[in-house]
Image 1 (cartoon, rainbow, N blue to C red):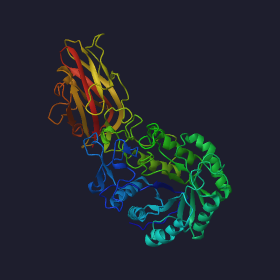
Image 2 (image 1 turned 135 degrees about the horizontal axis):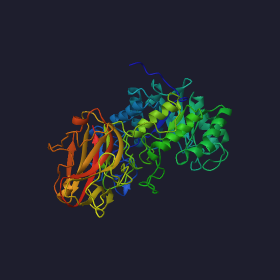
Image 3 (image 1 turned 90 degrees about the vertical axis):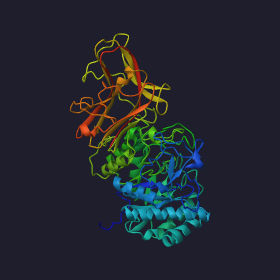
Image 4 (image 1 turned 90 degrees about the horizontal axis):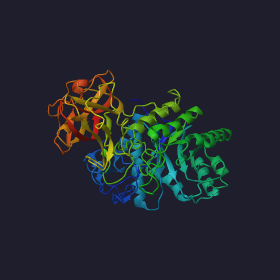
Length: 567
Protein backbone atom coordinates (compact mmCIF):
# COMPACT_ATOMS: atom_id res chain seq x y z
CA UNK A 1 0.00 0.00 0.00
CA UNK A 2 1.29 3.45 -0.89
CA UNK A 3 2.23 5.77 1.95
CA UNK A 4 -0.56 8.05 3.11
CA UNK A 5 -0.37 11.53 1.67
CA UNK A 6 -1.13 14.10 4.36
CA UNK A 7 -4.14 16.14 3.39
CA UNK A 8 -5.58 19.41 4.55
CA UNK A 9 -9.16 20.59 4.91
CA UNK A 10 -9.69 22.90 1.92
CA UNK A 11 -11.42 20.97 -0.84
CA UNK A 12 -12.04 18.02 1.50
CA UNK A 13 -15.04 16.64 3.38
CA UNK A 14 -14.65 15.67 7.03
CA UNK A 15 -17.10 14.24 9.51
CA UNK A 16 -17.35 14.95 13.22
CA UNK A 17 -16.38 12.02 15.42
CA UNK A 18 -17.58 11.92 19.04
CA UNK A 19 -16.12 8.61 20.19
CA UNK A 20 -17.71 9.18 23.59
CA UNK A 21 -19.59 5.92 24.19
CA UNK A 22 -18.53 3.62 27.01
CA UNK A 23 -19.87 0.80 29.16
CA UNK A 24 -19.02 -1.06 32.38
CA UNK A 25 -16.57 -3.84 31.70
CA UNK A 26 -14.96 -2.19 28.66
CA UNK A 27 -11.62 -1.77 30.48
CA UNK A 28 -11.85 2.01 30.56
CA UNK A 29 -10.88 4.04 33.64
CA UNK A 30 -14.48 5.26 33.94
CA UNK A 31 -15.96 1.73 33.79
CA UNK A 32 -19.45 3.19 33.38
CA UNK A 33 -22.24 3.76 30.89
CA UNK A 34 -21.35 6.98 29.09
CA UNK A 35 -23.66 8.70 26.57
CA UNK A 36 -26.03 5.73 26.26
CA UNK A 37 -28.03 6.46 29.40
CA UNK A 38 -28.45 5.11 32.92
CA UNK A 39 -26.93 2.18 34.72
CA UNK A 40 -27.77 0.38 32.51
CA UNK A 41 -29.53 2.31 29.73
CA UNK A 42 -33.15 1.15 29.68
CA UNK A 43 -36.63 2.50 28.94
CA UNK A 44 -36.99 5.78 30.83
CA UNK A 45 -33.24 6.00 31.36
CA UNK A 46 -31.54 6.67 28.05
CA UNK A 47 -29.93 9.54 26.14
CA UNK A 48 -29.82 8.38 22.54
CA UNK A 49 -32.33 8.46 19.69
CA UNK A 50 -31.05 6.20 16.90
CA UNK A 51 -30.16 2.58 17.57
CA UNK A 52 -26.89 1.45 15.98
CA UNK A 53 -26.64 -1.56 13.71
CA UNK A 54 -24.66 -3.89 15.96
CA UNK A 55 -24.02 -6.69 13.47
CA UNK A 56 -20.41 -5.88 12.55
CA UNK A 57 -18.86 -5.23 15.95
CA UNK A 58 -16.78 -7.83 17.78
CA UNK A 59 -18.75 -9.57 20.54
CA UNK A 60 -16.04 -8.59 23.04
CA UNK A 61 -16.82 -4.91 22.40
CA UNK A 62 -20.57 -5.20 23.02
CA UNK A 63 -22.24 -4.79 26.41
CA UNK A 64 -25.68 -5.79 27.61
CA UNK A 65 -28.15 -2.95 28.06
CA UNK A 66 -31.36 -2.95 30.09
CA UNK A 67 -33.61 -3.01 27.01
CA UNK A 68 -35.66 -5.98 25.85
CA UNK A 69 -34.28 -8.14 23.08
CA UNK A 70 -34.26 -6.81 19.53
CA UNK A 71 -37.14 -7.73 17.29
CA UNK A 72 -35.00 -10.46 15.72
CA UNK A 73 -34.50 -12.01 19.16
CA UNK A 74 -30.89 -10.91 19.66
CA UNK A 75 -29.92 -9.33 23.00
CA UNK A 76 -29.92 -5.52 23.02
CA UNK A 77 -26.22 -4.75 23.33
CA UNK A 78 -24.29 -1.52 22.77
CA UNK A 79 -20.69 -0.79 21.82
CA UNK A 80 -17.94 1.08 23.64
CA UNK A 81 -15.70 3.55 21.80
CA UNK A 82 -12.97 2.73 24.33
CA UNK A 83 -12.46 -0.49 22.40
CA UNK A 84 -9.93 0.09 19.58
CA UNK A 85 -11.67 -2.36 17.26
CA UNK A 86 -14.87 -0.28 17.45
CA UNK A 87 -13.08 2.90 16.37
CA UNK A 88 -11.23 0.91 13.71
CA UNK A 89 -14.56 -0.27 12.34
CA UNK A 90 -15.83 3.32 12.20
CA UNK A 91 -12.77 4.54 10.29
CA UNK A 92 -13.02 1.55 7.98
CA UNK A 93 -16.57 2.68 7.15
CA UNK A 94 -15.23 6.19 6.52
CA UNK A 95 -12.68 4.76 4.12
CA UNK A 96 -15.29 2.69 2.30
CA UNK A 97 -17.53 5.75 1.94
CA UNK A 98 -14.71 8.00 0.73
CA UNK A 99 -14.90 10.42 3.66
CA UNK A 100 -11.56 12.24 3.83
CA UNK A 101 -11.26 12.14 7.58
CA UNK A 102 -12.60 12.94 11.01
CA UNK A 103 -12.68 15.96 13.28
CA UNK A 104 -12.09 14.20 16.60
CA UNK A 105 -14.10 15.91 19.33
CA UNK A 106 -12.15 17.01 22.40
CA UNK A 107 -13.92 18.02 25.62
CA UNK A 108 -11.73 19.28 28.46
CA UNK A 109 -12.28 18.47 32.12
CA UNK A 110 -10.33 18.96 35.31
CA UNK A 111 -11.01 15.37 36.37
CA UNK A 112 -7.88 13.39 35.51
CA UNK A 113 -9.74 10.08 35.20
CA UNK A 114 -12.10 11.56 32.63
CA UNK A 115 -9.20 13.01 30.67
CA UNK A 116 -7.32 9.68 30.77
CA UNK A 117 -10.39 8.10 29.20
CA UNK A 118 -10.65 10.80 26.54
CA UNK A 119 -6.96 10.53 25.76
CA UNK A 120 -7.41 6.86 25.02
CA UNK A 121 -10.25 7.65 22.60
CA UNK A 122 -8.03 10.19 20.82
CA UNK A 123 -5.28 7.59 20.44
CA UNK A 124 -7.82 5.08 19.14
CA UNK A 125 -8.80 7.61 16.49
CA UNK A 126 -5.19 8.29 15.52
CA UNK A 127 -4.41 4.60 15.18
CA UNK A 128 -7.61 3.97 13.21
CA UNK A 129 -6.87 6.89 10.88
CA UNK A 130 -3.44 5.45 10.18
CA UNK A 131 -4.85 1.95 9.68
CA UNK A 132 -7.46 3.09 7.17
CA UNK A 133 -5.67 5.98 5.46
CA UNK A 134 -7.96 8.71 6.77
CA UNK A 135 -6.91 12.12 7.99
CA UNK A 136 -7.91 13.55 11.36
CA UNK A 137 -7.64 16.70 13.45
CA UNK A 138 -8.57 17.77 16.96
CA UNK A 139 -11.77 19.76 17.43
CA UNK A 140 -11.97 21.40 20.86
CA UNK A 141 -15.53 21.95 22.08
CA UNK A 142 -14.92 24.81 24.50
CA UNK A 143 -16.90 26.74 27.06
CA UNK A 144 -13.82 28.32 28.56
CA UNK A 145 -10.81 30.29 27.46
CA UNK A 146 -8.29 29.47 30.15
CA UNK A 147 -4.84 27.95 30.36
CA UNK A 148 -6.10 24.37 30.24
CA UNK A 149 -6.61 24.33 26.49
CA UNK A 150 -3.08 25.66 25.92
CA UNK A 151 -1.61 23.10 28.31
CA UNK A 152 -3.62 20.33 26.69
CA UNK A 153 -2.42 21.20 23.21
CA UNK A 154 1.25 21.53 24.19
CA UNK A 155 1.62 18.84 26.85
CA UNK A 156 -0.95 16.23 25.93
CA UNK A 157 -1.88 16.42 22.24
CA UNK A 158 1.61 17.26 21.02
CA UNK A 159 3.80 15.64 23.68
CA UNK A 160 2.14 12.88 25.69
CA UNK A 161 -0.04 11.55 22.88
CA UNK A 162 2.12 12.90 20.05
CA UNK A 163 -0.92 13.12 17.78
CA UNK A 164 0.27 15.87 15.48
CA UNK A 165 3.37 13.81 14.64
CA UNK A 166 1.13 11.27 12.95
CA UNK A 167 1.50 11.28 9.16
CA UNK A 168 -2.32 11.27 9.08
CA UNK A 169 -2.79 14.40 11.15
CA UNK A 170 -4.42 17.01 8.90
CA UNK A 171 -2.17 19.86 7.77
CA UNK A 172 -3.29 22.80 5.69
CA UNK A 173 -0.40 24.55 3.97
CA UNK A 174 1.94 22.56 6.18
CA UNK A 175 0.21 23.75 9.38
CA UNK A 176 -1.44 21.32 11.81
CA UNK A 177 -5.20 21.86 11.81
CA UNK A 178 -7.12 22.54 15.00
CA UNK A 179 -10.77 23.52 15.36
CA UNK A 180 -12.22 25.59 18.19
CA UNK A 181 -15.96 25.00 18.42
CA UNK A 182 -18.24 27.15 20.54
CA UNK A 183 -16.81 30.67 20.75
CA UNK A 184 -19.45 33.29 19.99
CA UNK A 185 -22.49 31.18 20.88
CA UNK A 186 -24.79 33.03 23.28
CA UNK A 187 -24.78 29.94 25.50
CA UNK A 188 -20.99 29.99 25.92
CA UNK A 189 -19.09 31.90 28.62
CA UNK A 190 -15.90 33.31 27.01
CA UNK A 191 -15.77 36.97 26.06
CA UNK A 192 -14.55 38.17 22.69
CA UNK A 193 -11.18 39.16 24.16
CA UNK A 194 -10.70 35.78 25.81
CA UNK A 195 -11.66 33.93 22.63
CA UNK A 196 -9.35 36.05 20.49
CA UNK A 197 -6.47 35.35 22.85
CA UNK A 198 -6.91 31.57 22.43
CA UNK A 199 -7.22 31.77 18.64
CA UNK A 200 -4.12 33.95 18.28
CA UNK A 201 -2.21 31.68 20.66
CA UNK A 202 -2.91 28.66 18.46
CA UNK A 203 -1.90 30.60 15.37
CA UNK A 204 1.33 31.56 17.10
CA UNK A 205 1.98 27.83 17.59
CA UNK A 206 1.91 27.51 13.82
CA UNK A 207 -1.63 26.08 13.62
CA UNK A 208 -4.30 26.49 10.98
CA UNK A 209 -7.38 27.32 13.06
CA UNK A 210 -10.99 26.49 12.15
CA UNK A 211 -13.85 28.19 13.95
CA UNK A 212 -16.98 26.21 14.70
CA UNK A 213 -19.27 29.22 15.00
CA UNK A 214 -22.97 30.05 15.36
CA UNK A 215 -25.20 30.11 12.31
CA UNK A 216 -25.65 33.88 12.65
CA UNK A 217 -21.95 34.61 13.11
CA UNK A 218 -21.78 37.01 10.18
CA UNK A 219 -24.66 39.24 11.40
CA UNK A 220 -24.11 38.90 15.17
CA UNK A 221 -27.82 38.13 15.63
CA UNK A 222 -29.83 35.18 16.89
CA UNK A 223 -27.54 32.70 18.63
CA UNK A 224 -24.40 34.76 18.05
CA UNK A 225 -23.06 37.17 20.67
CA UNK A 226 -22.52 40.74 19.55
CA UNK A 227 -18.99 42.08 19.39
CA UNK A 228 -17.35 38.91 18.04
CA UNK A 229 -16.64 40.21 14.52
CA UNK A 230 -12.87 40.34 15.04
CA UNK A 231 -12.93 36.91 16.68
CA UNK A 232 -14.53 35.39 13.60
CA UNK A 233 -12.18 37.20 11.25
CA UNK A 234 -9.20 35.77 13.15
CA UNK A 235 -10.00 32.22 12.06
CA UNK A 236 -8.37 30.66 9.00
CA UNK A 237 -11.59 28.78 8.19
CA UNK A 238 -15.19 29.35 9.26
CA UNK A 239 -17.58 26.43 9.84
CA UNK A 240 -21.04 27.67 10.90
CA UNK A 241 -23.26 25.20 12.78
CA UNK A 242 -26.32 24.38 10.67
CA UNK A 243 -27.82 21.52 12.70
CA UNK A 244 -31.38 22.45 13.60
CA UNK A 245 -31.98 24.32 10.35
CA UNK A 246 -34.77 22.37 8.65
CA UNK A 247 -34.82 24.20 5.29
CA UNK A 248 -31.62 23.66 3.28
CA UNK A 249 -32.79 25.95 0.47
CA UNK A 250 -33.68 28.78 2.82
CA UNK A 251 -30.39 28.28 4.63
CA UNK A 252 -28.56 28.39 1.30
CA UNK A 253 -30.09 31.77 0.45
CA UNK A 254 -29.77 33.38 3.86
CA UNK A 255 -26.52 31.87 5.09
CA UNK A 256 -24.44 29.67 2.77
CA UNK A 257 -24.14 32.03 -0.19
CA UNK A 258 -23.55 35.26 1.81
CA UNK A 259 -21.21 33.38 4.19
CA UNK A 260 -19.16 32.17 1.25
CA UNK A 261 -18.95 35.71 -0.17
CA UNK A 262 -17.98 37.19 3.21
CA UNK A 263 -15.23 34.62 3.71
CA UNK A 264 -13.86 35.28 0.22
CA UNK A 265 -13.81 39.03 0.87
CA UNK A 266 -12.06 38.61 4.21
CA UNK A 267 -9.51 35.99 3.19
CA UNK A 268 -11.00 33.08 5.11
CA UNK A 269 -11.73 29.54 3.93
CA UNK A 270 -15.25 28.20 4.26
CA UNK A 271 -16.44 24.80 5.53
CA UNK A 272 -20.26 24.63 5.58
CA UNK A 273 -22.05 22.01 7.66
CA UNK A 274 -24.46 19.39 6.30
CA UNK A 275 -26.43 16.78 8.20
CA UNK A 276 -28.94 13.96 7.63
CA UNK A 277 -31.71 14.84 10.09
CA UNK A 278 -32.30 15.42 13.79
CA UNK A 279 -34.34 14.26 16.81
CA UNK A 280 -33.73 13.76 20.52
CA UNK A 281 -37.10 12.68 21.90
CA UNK A 282 -35.50 9.97 24.07
CA UNK A 283 -33.16 12.50 25.65
CA UNK A 284 -34.63 16.00 25.65
CA UNK A 285 -38.17 15.38 24.45
CA UNK A 286 -39.72 16.86 21.36
CA UNK A 287 -41.19 15.02 18.42
CA UNK A 288 -39.88 11.72 17.17
CA UNK A 289 -38.22 12.08 13.76
CA UNK A 290 -38.31 15.84 14.41
CA UNK A 291 -36.33 16.87 11.32
CA UNK A 292 -36.97 13.87 9.05
CA UNK A 293 -34.24 12.43 6.91
CA UNK A 294 -36.85 12.11 4.16
CA UNK A 295 -35.23 9.01 2.66
CA UNK A 296 -31.93 10.85 2.14
CA UNK A 297 -33.43 13.79 0.28
CA UNK A 298 -32.82 16.21 3.17
CA UNK A 299 -29.09 15.41 3.29
CA UNK A 300 -28.79 15.40 -0.49
CA UNK A 301 -30.24 18.91 -0.74
CA UNK A 302 -27.37 20.28 1.38
CA UNK A 303 -24.83 18.58 -0.89
CA UNK A 304 -26.60 19.79 -4.02
CA UNK A 305 -26.57 23.40 -2.81
CA UNK A 306 -22.87 23.25 -1.88
CA UNK A 307 -21.87 21.91 -5.28
CA UNK A 308 -24.18 24.34 -7.07
CA UNK A 309 -22.42 27.15 -5.23
CA UNK A 310 -18.97 25.74 -6.13
CA UNK A 311 -18.07 25.11 -2.48
CA UNK A 312 -15.54 22.24 -2.41
CA UNK A 313 -15.21 21.79 1.37
CA UNK A 314 -17.80 20.49 3.84
CA UNK A 315 -18.30 19.09 7.32
CA UNK A 316 -20.75 16.24 7.91
CA UNK A 317 -22.33 16.49 11.35
CA UNK A 318 -21.92 13.83 12.63
CA UNK A 319 -20.51 10.35 12.20
CA UNK A 320 -21.56 8.70 15.47
CA UNK A 321 -23.98 11.16 17.09
CA UNK A 322 -26.63 8.57 17.96
CA UNK A 323 -27.79 10.86 20.78
CA UNK A 324 -29.35 13.41 18.42
CA UNK A 325 -29.85 11.03 15.49
CA UNK A 326 -27.55 13.01 13.22
CA UNK A 327 -25.31 9.94 12.80
CA UNK A 328 -24.31 8.57 9.41
CA UNK A 329 -22.76 5.44 10.97
CA UNK A 330 -24.65 2.22 10.36
CA UNK A 331 -28.04 2.28 12.03
CA UNK A 332 -30.79 -0.25 12.68
CA UNK A 333 -32.76 -0.64 9.47
CA UNK A 334 -36.12 -1.78 10.87
CA UNK A 335 -38.21 -2.78 13.85
CA UNK A 336 -36.51 -6.17 13.63
CA UNK A 337 -33.21 -4.61 14.79
CA UNK A 338 -34.22 -2.40 17.71
CA UNK A 339 -35.38 -3.30 21.23
CA UNK A 340 -39.06 -4.14 21.30
CA UNK A 341 -39.79 -2.09 24.43
CA UNK A 342 -38.39 1.32 23.43
CA UNK A 343 -38.83 3.72 20.53
CA UNK A 344 -35.72 4.29 18.41
CA UNK A 345 -35.21 5.95 15.06
CA UNK A 346 -34.35 3.57 12.20
CA UNK A 347 -33.10 4.25 8.68
CA UNK A 348 -36.54 3.23 7.35
CA UNK A 349 -38.53 5.59 9.60
CA UNK A 350 -39.88 7.56 6.63
CA UNK A 351 -41.73 4.51 5.26
CA UNK A 352 -39.24 3.24 2.65
CA UNK A 353 -36.81 0.44 3.45
CA UNK A 354 -33.25 1.80 3.59
CA UNK A 355 -30.30 -0.41 4.48
CA UNK A 356 -28.28 0.19 7.62
CA UNK A 357 -25.39 1.63 5.57
CA UNK A 358 -27.60 3.89 3.41
CA UNK A 359 -26.31 7.19 4.85
CA UNK A 360 -22.69 6.09 4.60
CA UNK A 361 -23.21 5.24 0.94
CA UNK A 362 -25.07 8.50 0.40
CA UNK A 363 -22.25 10.45 2.09
CA UNK A 364 -19.80 8.92 -0.36
CA UNK A 365 -21.88 10.01 -3.34
CA UNK A 366 -22.40 13.48 -1.85
CA UNK A 367 -18.65 13.90 -1.44
CA UNK A 368 -18.04 12.93 -5.06
CA UNK A 369 -20.62 15.45 -6.24
CA UNK A 370 -19.31 18.24 -3.99
CA UNK A 371 -15.80 17.67 -5.33
CA UNK A 372 -17.00 17.68 -8.93
CA UNK A 373 -16.16 14.01 -9.49
CA UNK A 374 -19.81 13.20 -10.23
CA UNK A 375 -22.31 15.37 -12.11
CA UNK A 376 -24.64 17.73 -10.30
CA UNK A 377 -28.05 16.15 -9.70
CA UNK A 378 -30.92 16.93 -7.36
CA UNK A 379 -32.02 13.28 -7.25
CA UNK A 380 -30.71 10.87 -4.61
CA UNK A 381 -28.47 8.69 -6.82
CA UNK A 382 -28.11 5.45 -4.85
CA UNK A 383 -30.34 2.39 -4.42
CA UNK A 384 -32.18 1.88 -1.15
CA UNK A 385 -29.94 -1.08 -0.44
CA UNK A 386 -26.79 -2.55 -1.91
CA UNK A 387 -27.24 -5.84 -0.03
CA UNK A 388 -26.75 -8.24 1.55
CA UNK A 389 -30.13 -7.34 3.12
CA UNK A 390 -32.54 -6.01 0.52
CA UNK A 391 -35.74 -5.69 2.53
CA UNK A 392 -36.76 -6.18 6.14
CA UNK A 393 -40.12 -5.09 7.48
CA UNK A 394 -42.52 -5.87 10.28
CA UNK A 395 -44.98 -3.34 8.80
CA UNK A 396 -44.53 -1.04 11.81
CA UNK A 397 -45.31 2.53 10.78
CA UNK A 398 -42.52 4.90 11.81
CA UNK A 399 -39.94 2.12 11.86
CA UNK A 400 -40.26 0.09 8.68
CA UNK A 401 -40.57 0.23 4.94
CA UNK A 402 -44.31 0.14 4.28
CA UNK A 403 -46.28 -1.28 1.33
CA UNK A 404 -46.18 0.61 -1.93
CA UNK A 405 -49.75 -0.52 -2.66
CA UNK A 406 -52.67 -1.84 -0.61
CA UNK A 407 -55.85 -3.44 -1.95
CA UNK A 408 -54.34 -3.42 -5.46
CA UNK A 409 -54.79 -6.69 -7.36
CA UNK A 410 -52.00 -7.32 -9.85
CA UNK A 411 -54.39 -7.65 -12.78
CA UNK A 412 -51.68 -7.50 -15.40
CA UNK A 413 -50.13 -10.68 -14.04
CA UNK A 414 -53.19 -12.83 -13.37
CA UNK A 415 -56.92 -12.29 -13.27
CA UNK A 416 -58.92 -12.15 -10.09
CA UNK A 417 -61.74 -14.68 -10.26
CA UNK A 418 -64.18 -16.37 -7.94
CA UNK A 419 -65.18 -13.41 -5.74
CA UNK A 420 -68.70 -12.11 -5.69
CA UNK A 421 -69.96 -8.62 -4.90
CA UNK A 422 -70.08 -9.45 -1.20
CA UNK A 423 -66.66 -11.03 -1.16
CA UNK A 424 -64.27 -8.45 -2.56
CA UNK A 425 -60.86 -9.41 -1.15
CA UNK A 426 -58.76 -6.95 0.84
CA UNK A 427 -55.05 -6.66 1.55
CA UNK A 428 -53.39 -4.10 3.80
CA UNK A 429 -51.65 -3.32 7.07
CA UNK A 430 -53.70 -3.68 10.24
CA UNK A 431 -52.71 -2.99 13.82
CA UNK A 432 -53.64 -4.60 17.12
CA UNK A 433 -55.26 -7.65 15.52
CA UNK A 434 -52.89 -10.56 15.04
CA UNK A 435 -49.17 -9.98 14.66
CA UNK A 436 -45.94 -11.86 15.05
CA UNK A 437 -43.81 -8.88 16.10
CA UNK A 438 -44.86 -5.41 17.21
CA UNK A 439 -48.53 -4.54 16.76
CA UNK A 440 -48.91 -4.65 12.97
CA UNK A 441 -49.12 -7.16 10.14
CA UNK A 442 -50.47 -7.50 6.61
CA UNK A 443 -53.99 -8.94 6.57
CA UNK A 444 -55.40 -10.70 3.48
CA UNK A 445 -59.08 -11.58 3.66
CA UNK A 446 -62.06 -12.29 1.42
CA UNK A 447 -64.85 -14.67 0.51
CA UNK A 448 -64.32 -17.39 -2.05
CA UNK A 449 -67.63 -17.88 -3.87
CA UNK A 450 -66.39 -20.09 -6.71
CA UNK A 451 -67.15 -23.74 -7.18
CA UNK A 452 -64.10 -23.92 -9.45
CA UNK A 453 -60.69 -22.33 -8.78
CA UNK A 454 -60.19 -18.87 -7.25
CA UNK A 455 -57.21 -16.55 -6.98
CA UNK A 456 -56.22 -12.99 -6.26
CA UNK A 457 -52.68 -11.59 -6.34
CA UNK A 458 -52.18 -8.28 -4.54
CA UNK A 459 -49.31 -5.93 -5.34
CA UNK A 460 -47.62 -4.96 -2.08
CA UNK A 461 -44.05 -3.71 -2.76
CA UNK A 462 -42.44 -2.15 -5.82
CA UNK A 463 -38.76 -3.15 -5.59
CA UNK A 464 -35.61 -3.60 -7.62
CA UNK A 465 -33.79 -6.50 -5.97
CA UNK A 466 -31.12 -8.56 -7.78
CA UNK A 467 -31.24 -12.27 -7.04
CA UNK A 468 -28.05 -14.25 -6.54
CA UNK A 469 -27.56 -17.92 -5.72
CA UNK A 470 -27.70 -17.14 -1.98
CA UNK A 471 -30.77 -14.89 -1.93
CA UNK A 472 -33.46 -15.95 0.55
CA UNK A 473 -37.08 -14.97 1.09
CA UNK A 474 -38.41 -15.29 4.64
CA UNK A 475 -41.77 -14.41 6.17
CA UNK A 476 -44.18 -15.42 8.93
CA UNK A 477 -47.82 -16.42 8.27
CA UNK A 478 -50.87 -16.92 10.47
CA UNK A 479 -53.81 -18.69 8.71
CA UNK A 480 -57.12 -18.45 10.58
CA UNK A 481 -58.77 -21.46 8.92
CA UNK A 482 -58.07 -24.21 6.42
CA UNK A 483 -58.56 -22.26 3.20
CA UNK A 484 -56.45 -19.41 4.61
CA UNK A 485 -53.47 -21.77 4.30
CA UNK A 486 -53.54 -20.89 0.57
CA UNK A 487 -52.33 -17.34 1.28
CA UNK A 488 -48.63 -16.72 0.69
CA UNK A 489 -45.98 -14.36 -0.73
CA UNK A 490 -45.20 -14.35 -4.45
CA UNK A 491 -42.61 -12.49 -6.53
CA UNK A 492 -42.75 -11.03 -10.04
CA UNK A 493 -39.45 -10.62 -11.86
CA UNK A 494 -38.57 -7.87 -14.33
CA UNK A 495 -38.75 -10.41 -17.17
CA UNK A 496 -42.33 -11.29 -16.23
CA UNK A 497 -41.56 -14.67 -14.66
CA UNK A 498 -42.82 -15.45 -11.16
CA UNK A 499 -41.73 -17.29 -8.04
CA UNK A 500 -44.93 -19.35 -8.08
CA UNK A 501 -44.17 -20.85 -11.51
CA UNK A 502 -40.42 -21.28 -10.99
CA UNK A 503 -40.64 -24.63 -9.23
CA UNK A 504 -39.24 -23.08 -6.03
CA UNK A 505 -39.67 -24.96 -2.76
CA UNK A 506 -39.61 -23.87 0.87
CA UNK A 507 -37.42 -25.24 3.67
CA UNK A 508 -39.69 -28.29 3.93
CA UNK A 509 -39.66 -29.11 0.22
CA UNK A 510 -43.19 -27.77 -0.37
CA UNK A 511 -43.92 -25.77 -3.53
CA UNK A 512 -43.90 -22.00 -3.15
CA UNK A 513 -46.97 -21.79 -5.40
CA UNK A 514 -49.89 -20.37 -3.38
CA UNK A 515 -51.96 -23.34 -4.52
CA UNK A 516 -49.93 -25.47 -2.10
CA UNK A 517 -51.35 -25.11 1.41
CA UNK A 518 -48.86 -24.12 4.09
CA UNK A 519 -48.96 -23.43 7.79
CA UNK A 520 -50.95 -24.51 10.81
CA UNK A 521 -54.31 -22.91 11.53
CA UNK A 522 -54.19 -20.19 14.22
CA UNK A 523 -50.42 -20.56 14.57
CA UNK A 524 -47.56 -18.34 13.42
CA UNK A 525 -45.10 -20.24 11.26
CA UNK A 526 -42.09 -19.13 9.22
CA UNK A 527 -41.56 -19.90 5.55
CA UNK A 528 -37.99 -19.76 4.20
CA UNK A 529 -37.04 -20.21 0.57
CA UNK A 530 -33.60 -19.90 -1.03
CA UNK A 531 -35.10 -18.30 -4.13
CA UNK A 532 -31.66 -18.03 -5.71
CA UNK A 533 -31.78 -21.75 -6.45
CA UNK A 534 -34.47 -21.00 -9.04
CA UNK A 535 -34.24 -17.28 -9.81
CA UNK A 536 -30.53 -16.43 -9.68
CA UNK A 537 -29.58 -13.77 -12.22
CA UNK A 538 -33.08 -12.28 -12.31
CA UNK A 539 -34.34 -9.09 -10.63
CA UNK A 540 -37.40 -8.87 -8.40
CA UNK A 541 -39.80 -6.20 -9.66
CA UNK A 542 -42.83 -6.66 -7.39
CA UNK A 543 -43.65 -8.47 -4.17
CA UNK A 544 -47.18 -9.88 -4.13
CA UNK A 545 -49.37 -11.49 -1.48
CA UNK A 546 -51.75 -14.03 -2.96
CA UNK A 547 -54.71 -16.29 -2.31
CA UNK A 548 -54.85 -19.10 -4.87
CA UNK A 549 -57.00 -22.20 -4.29
CA UNK A 550 -58.75 -24.92 -6.26
CA UNK A 551 -62.50 -25.51 -6.01
CA UNK A 552 -63.71 -24.49 -2.56
CA UNK A 553 -65.86 -21.82 -0.95
CA UNK A 554 -65.84 -19.87 2.28
CA UNK A 555 -64.23 -16.96 4.06
CA UNK A 556 -60.49 -16.76 4.36
CA UNK A 557 -58.21 -14.51 6.44
CA UNK A 558 -54.48 -14.75 6.97
CA UNK A 559 -51.75 -12.49 8.29
CA UNK A 560 -48.22 -11.99 6.95
CA UNK A 561 -45.46 -10.46 9.10
CA UNK A 562 -41.67 -10.01 9.34
CA UNK A 563 -40.87 -10.15 5.63
CA UNK A 564 -37.15 -10.35 4.77
CA UNK A 565 -35.21 -10.71 1.52
CA UNK A 566 -31.46 -11.06 2.00
CA UNK A 567 -28.38 -12.87 0.78
